[in-house]
Length: 395
Ligand code: CAA
Image (cartoon, rainbow, N blue to C red; front, top):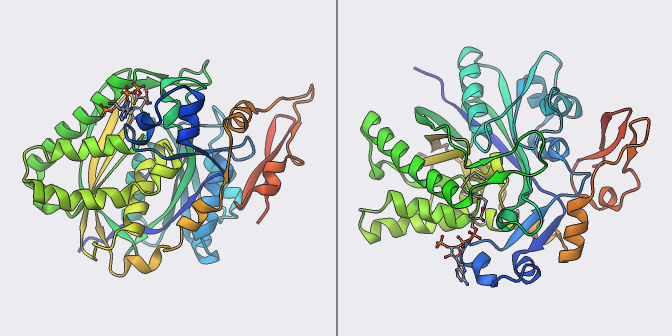
C-alpha cells in the first residue's frame, strides 16, 4: 500500500505590528465599509525592515521543529514572491539559522502566490522516494502595493512553515489534483519595480474563472462532486474573494447545503482577516485558521484546497484530516494577534518606506533599531555587512 504523506506540523509567524483597516480608510478618504464589508478585511500585518521573508520564515519554522526534526530534514523549500536576492535562495539562509543537518537541498520556488503549493508537491514526490525523510516547506511573503493604491487595503506580511513527512499527524495530501496555466497579465512585478503592477478587477475575474474551470475538470477526471468534500480552503488575497469562490462553486446547490460550508468558511478567514494577504502563505493560513477555529471537523474529513498564483498557475487538490489532528495545533493563537502593536497611519507610512541604505562599503546596521527589541519572533534581519545580509537569533 502507498505510504501516506502530508502535513505533520504547521507554524505561523507574523510581524509585531498591524494597521486597523478603518484607519487606512480614514487616511485614504474611503468609506470604511468598502474595506470592512466590501473586502471582509479588518487588520493588516505590517513588517518593519528587520522582519524580512528569511527572518519570518525561520521564525515560523523554529516554533515547530525539534532537534530530531532538524536531523531528518533533507530539503528546505521556500515559496515566495518577495525574494531578497536574485541568485541565492532564502532557504539557504533559513537552513543555516535553524541548524538543520548539512546534507540537505535548499531552494526557492517562484510562481506568484502558487509557489508553496508547488513546493508541497515536490516535497511529497521526494518523500515517496525517500520514505524516512522530512521536508520543510515555507511560504513567506510581504505584500506591498504602495501608498494610496487600490491594492493598499490588501497588503499583509507573514510566514507559514510546514513539516512534510510520512504518516503525518495533521493532514494527508492526497494524489488527486488538477493544475491550470494561463499566460495572463493580472498581477506581476518586473525586476525594475518595487511594487507589483495589478489589473485588479481582471485578476479577481481570472481567479474565479480558473477556480470554476479547474474544479469542473477535477470533478470530471476523478468522478467526484461537492458531496465528497467537508470543507474548502482558498487562496485569500482578501477574504471576500474566498466568499465569491464559495458562491461560484455552490452556484447550483441548495442553500442549506451551502450554509454548512459557509460556517466553515468563516472559521477559515479568522486569521486572514487580521493579517491580510501573505501571498504564498495565504491558502495555508486559511487552512490553519479553519483547523484551529472550527469545531465541526473530524478525522477523515476531506478538505478541498484552491491555490492561485497570478500570471497565472492554479491547482485544486485535497487533504484528509489525520486522527487527533487537533492535538497538534494551538487553541490560543488569537492571543498572538491581540499582543501586536497597533500603528497609526503615520507610523505605518514611516515603516513602509524604511529600507536598506548602504554606506560606501556596503554596510547598513539595524541592530539598535527598536523593531528588533520589540520583536517576539525568534530571528531578525540585523544588518548588512559588505553587501551580505546578517540575521540574528533573539529568542
Ligand atoms: N459598503 C460596502 N461595500 C462596499 C462599499 C461600501 N461603502 N464600497 C465598495 N464596496 C464593495 C464593492 O461593491 C466591492 O465588492 P464586490 O466586488 O462584492 O462588488 C468591494 O467593496 C471592493 O470595491 P471595489 O471593487 O470598487 O474596490 P477597488 O476596485 O478599489 O479594489 C481590488 C478592489 C481590485 C480587489 C483591489 O483591492 C486590488 O487591486 N487588490 C489587489 C489585487 C488582488 O488582490 N487580486 C485578487 C486576485 S489575484 C490573486 O489572487 C493573487 C494575489 O494574491 C495578488
